[in-house]
Image 1 (cartoon, rainbow over the protein chains, first blue to last red):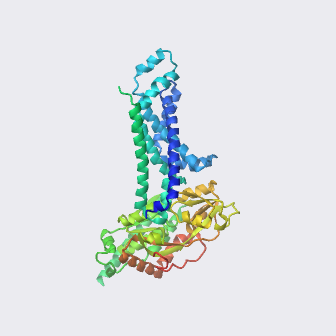
Image 2 (cartoon, rainbow over the protein chains, first blue to last red):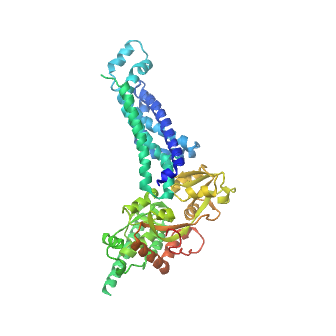
Image 3 (cartoon, helix red, strand yellow):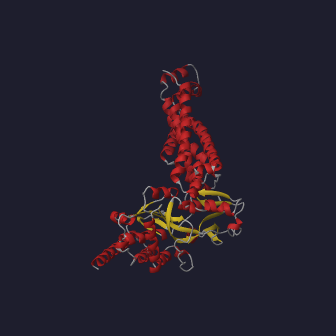
Amino acid sequence: MNPLIDNLGLVLEALGTTLMMAVIAGVGSILLGVLVTVARVSPIRALRVAAFGYVQFFVNVPLLALLLLAVFALPDAGLMLPLTPTAIIVLIVYEAAYVSEAVRSGVNTVAVGQLEASRALGLTLAQSLRLVVLPQALRAVVQPIGNVMIALAMNTALAAAVGVVELTAAVNKINLVAAQPILIFSSAGIIYMGIALAIGLAAGRVERKVAIVR
Amino acid sequence: MIRITRRKAVAGAALAAAALALAACSSTTSLPGDENDADAAAETSSVFADAPVAADDLILPGSTMERIRERGTLVVAEALDAPLLSQQNPTDPDSVEGFDADLAKLLAIYILGEPNVEIVPPATETREAMLQNDTVDVVFNTYTITPERAEQVSFAGPYFESGLAVAVKSDNDEIKGIEDLDGKEVIVGANTPAVTAVPEQAPTANVTAFATDPAAVQALLQGRGDAYVQDYTLLASNAANDSALKVVGTPFTKEPYGIGLKHGDDEFKSFINDWLLEIQESGHWAEAWKTTLGTVTDSDVPTAPEIGSVPGS
């Protein structure tokens, strides 16, 4: 009846690709985003400027443009990777900029006095960031990062434009034969909604566990 | 008598205006050494000269045709990035040229007396939805008639018959056609019949779909695939523009293109089918073919497919 159910195998396989991309890119972008934030608050001016430039660049260039550049321009520069890894790398560097902005807002919730106190206790800068500032900053921004992860999961759909067979590409393919776009794309929309809800609920639970009550 | 004269006068005035508009745009965009464009414009306008206009008694009261005539524009879903079929001129966004685009204008002349077309670029994946919820009147979008699609929309025509063919890089002597694609990396356009046709003909081919034709060509030239399977006419036009690409073999499928209409609108369907017959007989169909698709092939004007000749039409 629903063409998506008739093609369940294809849909599940493609959903697997979507989830795989979202998970790898999610973990990668959080790690890279935290590093970028550290660079942004570091005392070294060159690092701060570089991190600022990084965030501004990726926040202001559309993801689709980045994907097309990575897939079609890099080969001209002599660097050609398979499509799915290329898309995952682009998602990581793109979403890391948003993660970094979220984490930076968390850093701002940590009182300056705490950093000064930790330095006075003899911690190195790296130690005070790792042991004092970042843990508090991250615990303050669970929800914003959860929202970035939801956006990331939705953004995986753009990889369909550059040949990655994820959920959107698969339902496009099914619709090509079945010609029932409203039914097919709303069904796919419900699947994406389920992914977003799951991430949102997970973020809510983590938040309740780690939030700092001040 | 008087009415007909008046309509002819209106059509004449509209054509004169169109000719002026064409002249105007060729003068504003003309650059040194740009004479070809002016020629092309003059050539295109000949397609619309004396184009048939429907008699008033064909515009049935309460019909889709009447609604369109009252609105004054024909709303068409057509591509903006398909060379020779429906391609927007980047320097003059108002001018969209190609076989599909010209036929859409001819249909507008038939209903309205002037080539008044409003284009809604189709996301090819939502053509059926756009017809079902009245976003567009007709779809001119190399829309292959299939029985599954005919359950969701109606098709007038077919107005043209093409087929899928194989393109490779010019230096590739190994692939001679669809029969050599087994086990190869094959690029297709997403949302084209090739997505399903290639696995049927070459079951072990590894198919990668790109969203647009330019992206697919780029991917082929960069070596992401061994071959690119797409509509023959589109490939021929790409190959004519880029010597790094060549078409091998002959088309291996038959793709009858229809004009997509809202499901069940039989009045409008037979009205459009009558119009198709009329422009086939008047030579406007052949003229539209000659100035667009015909410019990249050496063959004569093909015979227009027989209307209603394929399942689903």
